Length: 221
Ligand code: HEM
Image (cartoon, rainbow, N blue to C red; front, side, top):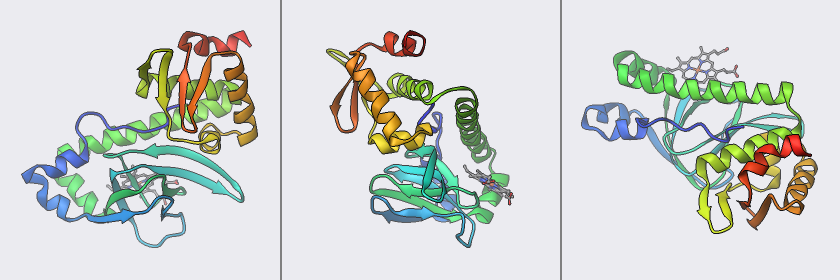
């Protein structure tokens, strides 16, 4: 399951830096947020678009005491406040925030912004389909393996004993992304560690010792 929705090569941050988009960029206000700041909830008044300038945000649904993470946003990614989701910062972050109405006008005026928007929404849709596919057809074990394999392929770094993956997430945060309890994820991770497929380098970084075996883990165990 992809843990993030990354823009392709053109992103809004770079677009905003060019002189012809300076006026669009002025429509956005910079906001510095500490770690764990709730940026928006489904109950907020007002309708804003926000773009991540630095740091990381988590987009999630919350019912009673349960949470489900829909997406992790990184610099260049965009979201809006007019959804049923909550957004909170995972690290200290800077966001650019502007009114949806103003942004809509800019989208109409600029095919380039419209194109970036289609790409972003396409990524969000892809992420949503992956989540639905996982929840409908796969169990927690398969979803965890998908998540780890995707993370290793997207952000893995070569390591003498395999591939190191800085997830930047603790067990509970992985559980919220995969749609399982912390206990389930913790025992599945222990199983993977015991069988020598992965190892913990530190609280938030995993070492994938054997990626092909991890990919096959569902059929092997
Ligand atoms: C050009 C500016 C935008 C306009 C005019 C706009 C307008 C709308 C409207 C009218 C809805 C339906 C709301 C409802 O059902 O009551 C909607 C839903 C939604 N929009 Fe936007 N939107 C814009 C930009 C964005 C952006 C940039 C994102 C995120 C990347 C986004 C994400 C969503 C999502 C996820 C929903 C579904 C909300 C839900 O059902 O929970 N929108 N939008």
